[in-house]
Image (tube, rainbow, N blue to C red; front, side):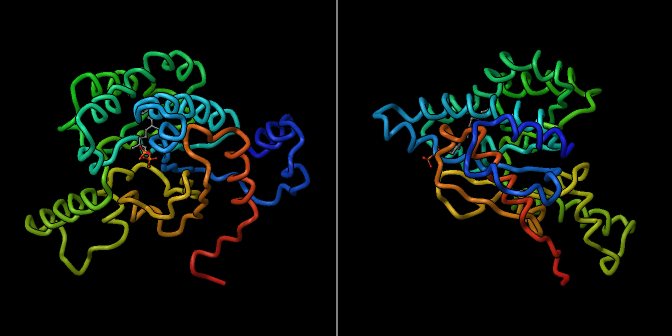
Length: 255
Ligand code: FPP
């Protein structure tokens, strides 16, 4: 997998990254908070939804790059449980994007052996969003390449509350005693129970916060923040994030 990344990077136009050594491993799971669509649009005197439309193009390119270089899991924060607070027109537009993206990209995802997954609460999602994602999940379920995990109507605190409730019920039923509850039990109740925790978190647009995203799962992840707005996030930025990750020494609390 590392060779794929090395080859990819070598093909890039000469940049200030070109002299950086390939030291570390490729992150297996990359999670991205795609931020800055609204500001991108504002800078150009366009409506916010124009920023989201452009952001979708960055989703397309980022997914292709990630799959090409051998990332195993790419989690994209596409719609949070807090995003419902936005004007209805914007919410409607945002929730149309998965359908638009998948209508255009599903054949390519299938060809590239990508497996689509969903992380979030499905109940409140409109049927057009859900059916597009469910179709993609079904059509790609046997694929063995990169997992493309869409966080849609996702909120980490909600996820944790639900996990605690499920564990509480196990205790009520006598299947588990409170003393026996372990990190593994909590992990098993999360929406990411089938996934490894992210190795690298990327957030664009200069905001340095987690915004209720994967609070449990990011406990030992490496963070990389950039001022680049999501619609402007290009291959070069992605490569830089990975190159920085490769130079980090992960100690997981050890020495
Ligand atoms: C945050 O930017 C971004 C979002 C809330 C939505 C992210 C969605 C996309 C990038 C497109 C998703 C595409 C698919 C295929 C699911 P913001 O609007 O908060 O930007 P601002 O902070 O500059 O206002």
